[in-house]
Image (cartoon, rainbow, N blue to C red; front, side, top):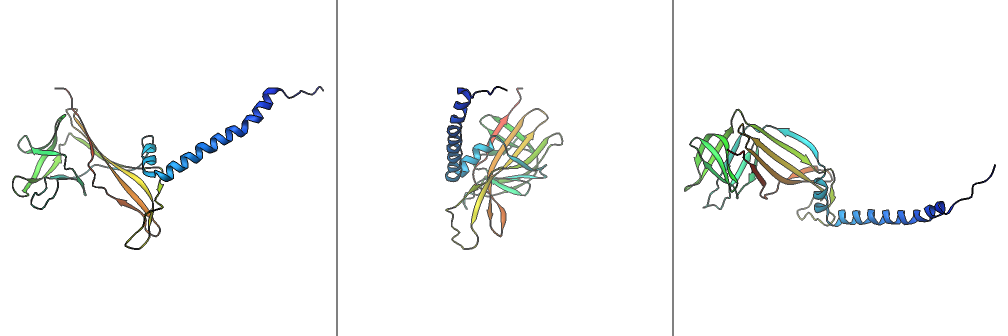
Length: 215
């Protein structure tokens, strides 16, 4: 048998392998440094690609509290058993007997007013329910990745929350007319040795999008 001499292409491939490995190592190291130094931002970018679903329910009740100027209470929106900051929302009783959200993009009728109570002056707290033809869902999704919190100190003592993840709550409310309200809150959950993962609810305003069907 005649031996096949190794050609120049095979030699070039062998010589090029270390460069490929070095480049891959640099990319991996850079990604790890980014994840460690800017964990929350890095994980949020990954969340745009994929998150893990954990729960989906149909909320049984809703309420909007316009707050109280005398006690500096800001407006809040309650969905199920969770109360959220909603100081940018403008909620009114319109038409009579119904509760609506007024936005720059139009008006969205939540549903039937079931209770109204005064909160001082012209401010009120409205409780309402969805119409029977509405489709309402509240879903919870979590980051698939966690990020480290190495420099956090628990000044009150006890275990330190060394890891965190983003938690997303999304309310989608569809009317029979085709109007859709899409509301997204982003919270966190943190892990501490001995306590496990504990939800941390943030007071930031939700991202709200209203899609109305042309009349």
